[in-house]
Length: 173
Image 1: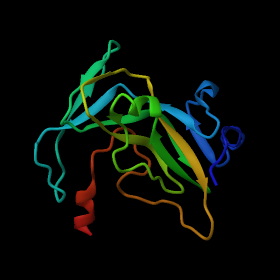
Image 2: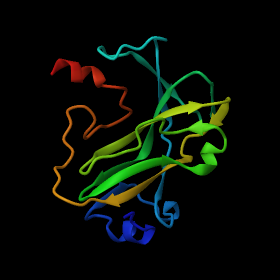
Image 3: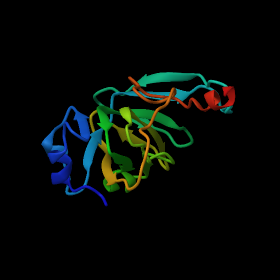
C-alpha cells in the first residue's frame, strides 16, 4: 500500500523525516522534492565499473543551466530524508517528464532505513534549462510486509551530497 499525503504528514518525525518540510510540496500520495544547485558530470566518456570515476561539479545559477543531450548529470535533492518501517520510492514528476527530462533513470527504489539526500540520475532527450529549487521529483512510501532489516551501506547511507557511483566498492569485497 502507498501512503496518502495526509498519512505522510501524520508520520513526520516517527517513520518519515523530510528536512526541510513544506506543506505546499505535499501531494495526495507523495511529496515533491527540489533540485539542489549543484550537479556532477563524469569527466571521461568511458566509465569503468571497477574504478572510481572522476566527476566535475557544476553550479546551476539562479538564471538556470541548459542541460545537453548525451550527458548524464548527477544532481541531488535539497531535502534530506530518512525513512523507518516503510519503503521510500522516488519518481520524476510528470510535468518534468513531459519536457523530456528523465530524473531517475534506473534507481528510484529506496530501502527501509535509508537516511540521506537522494542522488538523481538526470538525462534529457533534448536540451532543457533547469533551475535550482525546482520541484523535480516526488517521493512516496510503500508499507512493507514481513520481517526485514534496515538498510546498511558503506556506500550511500548517511551521505551529505551528490553520490557518484560507488559500484567499484563491490569489487573490493
